[in-house]
Length: 328
Image 1 (cartoon, rainbow, N blue to C red):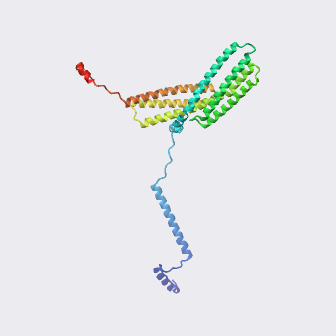
Image 2: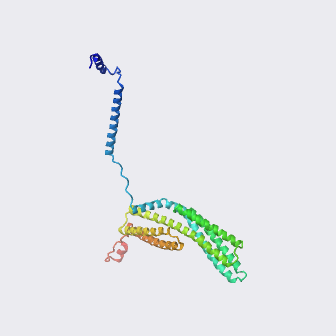
Image 3: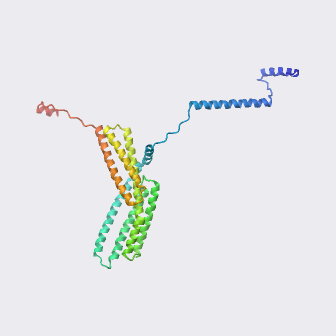
């Protein structure tokens, strides 16, 4: 160090010993170096801590993908959720509709029987007016049924909203067509039996059949929810209840049976002809009834397992009649 700076060096050394009470100016370059070193040390500490945390807590692995069977059960659980409560809440309304439909169909049959008698008594001049009168009464009965059916489709639980909306649209179109034909009959628009028959065919093909198909597919969708509900409860029972081997075997058979019936019901949603869909629905419901019978067998076997019969005490044949009677 140059001579002129010797005293300065001594002064700096003395001041460093008393730094607690003296402030020493530091050059700007040294401030930057100190700040840089401090920042590097902080960053290094953060990176070391992060690395240690990664080593201690490995990243959570993504959940494994569900198999097709697991996905099918997941869909059933989602369908069955809350179904029993809502079903019980709307059960009375469903029963009222089915009772009304039964009476309505009986009234339609009675009207047709009466019309046949009226036509036999009619002469050439009154035949067409009799036909118009009979057809009008039948149209009014059909109109009343479709209006009630619309209320049923609007409030029923356990169906997809897409199917509900489509069914309501088909029923609304049919109701409007029925009202138009009724107005035509009352306004004497039809002048011959041929015109009336043509209108009747058009009403059936263009309006009634699409509505019937939509209602059938809506009911089928609700049946799928019913099956999902039963399968869910049956699976829960097999997991939470100690079943006998026979009862468990029947329960497994029931699940397989329900699964096959479920597949048959789902196929109905893709059918475009009402006749085909109606036949498939009949077959599927017959199959599901056999599943219910197997389920009853499983329940009976489980009851026998949980409540075994009590063995009767054996009676010594060598005892006297009086002692036998006392032992009994």
